[in-house]
Amino acid sequence: MGVNTAATEWVRILRPGTAARGQLTCFPPGGGSATFYRELARHIGAGIEVTAVQYPGRQDRLDDPMITDLQVLADRIAAGIARRPGSHRVLFGHSMGATVAYETALRLAAAGQPVEALLVSGRPAPEFVETARLHQASDSALIDDLERLANDPAPVRLLRTEPGLADLVLPAVRADYQAVETYRHQPGPLLSCPVVALVSTEDPTTTVAQAEQWRAVTDGPFGLRTFSGGHFYLDEQHAAVAQEITRHVN
Image 1: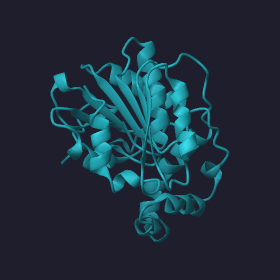
Image 2: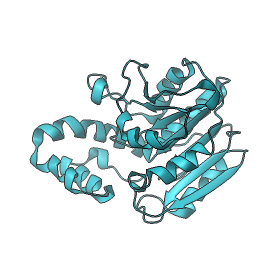
Image 3: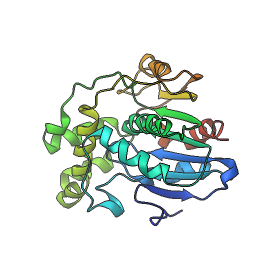
């Protein structure tokens, strides 16, 4: 399954769908790209359009300046999504993507285009303040953290032995870490849509208690779903995660 790079500046179509069934937009984790969700898209219910956000500074946007301010990133993404036709939008984000999806949902609601549901995965609620400063650390420290989070650290270790690959990958990782580590939640209106938090039982970045705190961002219904596995549990449970997401797409 390929990615339609002609979609828009910000959105890549992973699988076309029918407008009546709704639209799912996925937000990649830090250092990730739209293709992170290719396999998940295969498992989403029939007829649903599946898209993914493409952050600048990677893949077909390699030459675009990276954005290190998460609020600015959400501003640009929300404007791009708002220009796309369609309705019944549902947003899903994993790790950094969860926070970006939340901030994007706020902006779409303010623009009169509220989403139908927001699903957030592997990330503490927005009030959480990240105290680490890995974006200021060495490349080796960044790679250490990527190894810590990976299901299989072997591919990550190539960044230590392949300097060309590291030069390609690590700038985007560093920019995304800066966006997360400098993010501060700004109090404001609550969402009115359902919010569902997904968390794995062995995630070193997010506890179940932290995932439960996402209930504070909405006046609407809140749900919590736990999965087995580590931070990137969804790589091993695409079908189960897709089933949960599909339930919330009209």
